[in-house]
Image 1: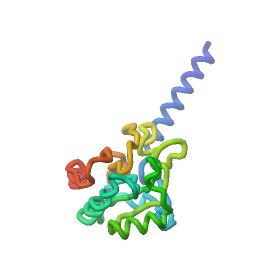
Image 2 (image 1 turned 135 degrees about the vertical axis):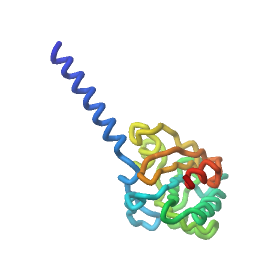
Image 3 (image 1 turned 60 degrees about the horizontal axis):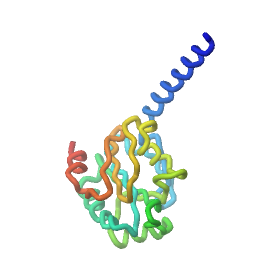
Length: 182
């Protein structure tokens, strides 16, 4: 009986330690491949607010690229940036290659904010960044599901998840612009 109690205490301690270490992980601990094929270490965003957006070229929300670019031009710089993650998770609305996606974004919307290589934002093959964004166990803040293309996640200057904005909401919404200006 004593051995069983010790075993349960051991398991509880392991759970507490793993919970604390998961909550200590932040956005700056990740890296990913850019749309140009280079590895980008997210620790370079230390001190900046980051808006992370899953994107798609053939979606009803695709015109949000224009608003994202406006937001980036207005606020981007030392204190704020945007990172776009193309994903083909919703009705195959991002079928292109990285090269095709980059060409589409540049030609049609003049995108200058950082675009990443295409990833998966849900399911068994979810990218580690999106696993962190969507799992309270990983981010220490909240569980979310990526509902559709152009869901926006707000990351503070220290790499912590702050909140998210649903796909249909404009990147220029008060929720986002007020957060940037805090």
